[in-house]
Image 1 (cartoon, rainbow, N blue to C red):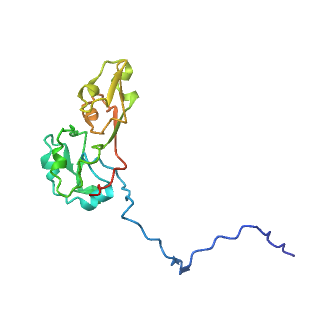
Image 2: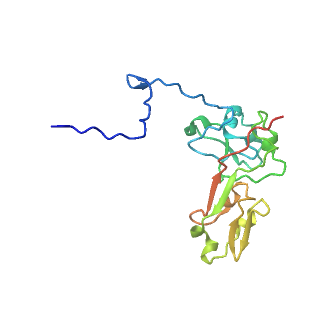
Image 3: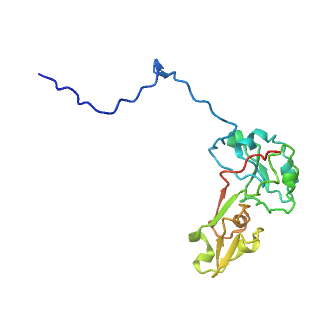
Length: 199
């Protein structure tokens, strides 16, 4: 039986990595940890003025001074189950939202400098989940707009609230006060924050 030759292709086969016993021995490119953030598996809400997450985790001493300084008890230590984030300051709006103090005592108390005044105090953003919101079902409800501490972050038109994502700081007050049985406010942490300012 005569075997036909395999058809020739113009593409050259991809070069296989060098290996010994199936273990790749090619060099691994260096990771530039100075310029890139390392992604977390679980994004969390940080207090106002929090710098880039990777720099935050390196610099935060877990001293708890920002927690003590908060007059509204809005800052908590992250639980142990969060791994390398454990004991760092977070905000849990379902328990106590950030009230956006004028003088930000949490920032003033931060000696390691991972909470800074020089970057916007944006912790995330909120959205109204319309199918859960009373106001979107012909029921009068303006609670979120009445309690929002950030001017212009929530507007109410035709009895329905809308969150301006360009103004919202993600403080979580709207979520904290929402009376809907299934909370109608979706609160998302900031996935990227500015790095530590150069002095």
